[in-house]
Image (tube, rainbow, N blue to C red; front, side):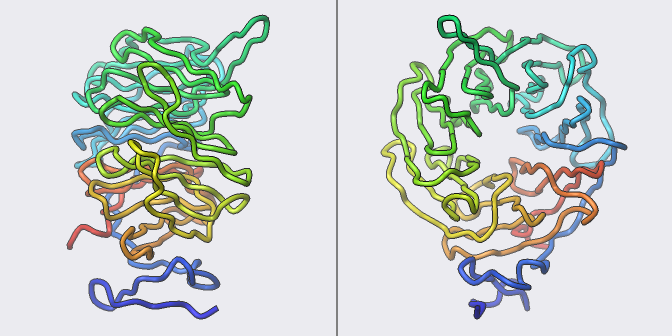
Length: 344
């Protein structure tokens, strides 16, 4: 296949079309950004990452149940947060409140909150995703969570349930049970806290957060492991599929449900994030690359392998300021990269 080359970007670098990005191009680095920090903790696979809203801290959680905090600007270790009392404490998801006072995490079946400054545990909700209908019970790990912009609510998901909690005391506010018996693969709450999106293999739903009533549903014809992200101030929902289903990023309006864009992809999406503005999407793919995709031109601006090929990248997070991309790996490392769209 002939690769389609567009105009030069920042000197001699080129933008590679997603439609023609096959063959050797996929194995090459393109506009690899500068590495800012490398954090190491032996024997840890880091599957959960968060950068605090004020861009002061990087928080990473591992399969060993460890939660570590580093200073983003200096790269210095700050503290560890305890999960010792939780059996089978795999850390699946993390978030930090806007005031940077509280870290919340999905730790195996539990929802836990820590005081970031002291490291003290504020509360723990055991079996947080449990749900019972009649005599049948459903449970699952807390595999993903997100906060609204004000930090008032936690939306957690796992198994077949989506739950809304009060951030400051862990009180359960609302529960949604996916009665189609499809496992929830990802979820996200809009910054204003009005809507929640969830993804299964067959569809993505947008729900009203207060009532959990369905607002929109986007059906798909194939099974797919889907990832979700919000863009344009939370007004747009980005849905990423994998090669078992639709090989594309699809972008929908939250208010109307209208599909506004579809960007073809060639690789499976492990993680998905959106920097400030409406210009780009950052993905972690199944070929162990991070790719920065320009929405306007539907081209790859940068693509690189962030970690040693002996392991694999396992998680992705963005600095809310847009200045850094953070990646976690299966070989004990978390790396901080300067965003390739930031001028030297």
